[in-house]
Image (cartoon, rainbow, N blue to C red):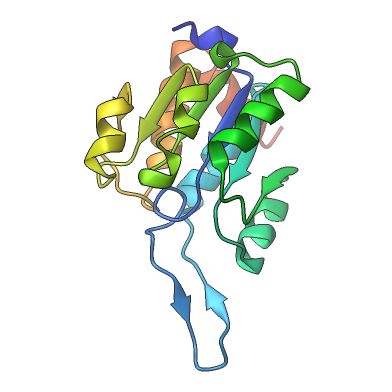
Length: 171
C-alpha cells in the first residue's frame, strides 16, 4: 500500500473518535467525549493535504460541532449503509481504493472498510474489524486512536514533522 496515494481519511465516530459511550442527561441532551489528541492529528492530516470525512450511522449535534471545530467539511451522519454510501462517494469524486484510509471499530464499518486500501482500528475494536485491518493501534477508541493512525500515515509519507510545523508553529 502506497501511503503517498492516500487522499481521504474516513473516520467512524462512536468507538473510534469517542469511547463508544452515548451520554444522555435528564433533559435528553446527548454528549460525547472526544480526544484533543485526535483533533490535533486531524488538523495535521489536513495540513498534509488529506481530506477527512466523518461517516457515522448515528446523528448527533455534538458530532457536527466537533467537525466544525476541526474544519471537517465532509460530515455524513445517520448513514445506515456505509458501504454503499462510500462506494458512491468514491465514484462521484474520482477516488480509488488506493486513495482511501479508513478507521472504524465495529461491525457497521466492516463492509465499508473494503473500499479502503488502508484500514486501522482502535485496540478495543471488534475482532472481525481487527481481522480486516492492517493496523491495530494500541489506543482505545476516544483515547488517541485516530491520532495514532494519522501519525503512522504521516510518518510513512515523511510529512510528520512538516505537519507539526504547519499546525503548531507560532511563527
